[in-house]
Amino acid sequence: MDLSSGIQVLTTSHNCASYLNKCFETVETALKGFKWMMVFCDDASADETEEVVNAYKTGTSADKIIYKKFDKAETIGQAKNRTCLISLQNKEEYPVLCFMDADDEMGEERVSGLLPHLTEEEPLVFGDYIYQDLSNGEDSKKMLMVAERRYPYLTFGHWATLIHSNLVPENGIFFREDIENYDEMLTWWELKYSKNIKIKPVSGVMTNFYRRNRPNSCSWTFRNEKDQEILTKLREKMNEIYPIGPH
Image (cartoon, rainbow, N blue to C red; front, side, top):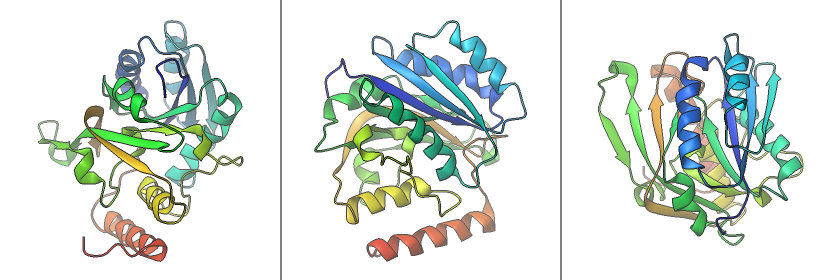
């Protein structure tokens, strides 16, 4: 798609007020010069999230910001699908979807680097990202995740992508809601192997800085036995769609 295409930044947040200003700062940098808007769905935050968003509205370069507050979602997929449903109202003018978690930081090249590769024939593109597990503190090792290497098993987050809005059905349910976490990986698997949607990796474009296990993270990460239970369920559901093979 060309650089004049309108872009919707779809953001979900639960008690991430302390991270929002940095998140918004990186979004502004990545979207500089583009036509864009934001859909912000507040997942029952009990902190100052709404106040931070309202303050951000006064200085943003976005054409508009839609803020909606909801009761707590049952799964991450459900929380993200709320933004997808709202995005349909603006898809004609803003056909490109750029998902974001409120406690992440967007890569400066995410939009400019991925947008030229996005087409109706290849409606989902993704790039590289930085992964850091903060379980052992802020000094934990940062790892570069290269898109080409993540492609075989589609192990990348929604925050590393650009997506054509035509992929979102009329009911807004784009991400799988039947698993607590890793819903996007199951969604990519279903798109590729059940719906024959082309997914394109674009290595060399830094899209996101993903920090797992942040305090009050809105990414709903789990640890130890709970995390393993969800991963086992993910693998089972992927195998139901198309055998995953050795991994």
